[in-house]
Image (tube, rainbow, N blue to C red):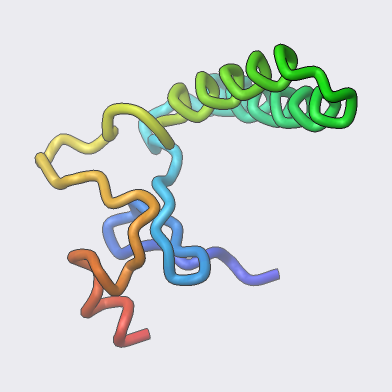
Amino acid sequence: MTDPLVTPDGRYLVVRGRLWRRTDPALPEERRSELIHELMDARRAKKTALAADDHAGVEAAKARVDAAKTGLGERGPVWWDDDAPDETRRMAENTRYAEWFAAL
């Protein structure tokens, strides 16, 4: 398996040309690990709730996923402080990374 493509500033992963915000590198390792475990547990809970047609369970699990991803810095306020906009979910070719991405 190859390492994922990361923007030069380390803020985003690039998956099929789309930018996805990375985890806040300032998070202590122990906290990051806790949040990743919670994220995986919440995703499993969502899958179980979907299989059981449990709408309330799905919504609760989705809220847990969102909370974990926000805690990781992948959603919510950006973790960098240079006023650069959040370009999560945008195609790299339509962002300030376009020239870098085209040169790959």
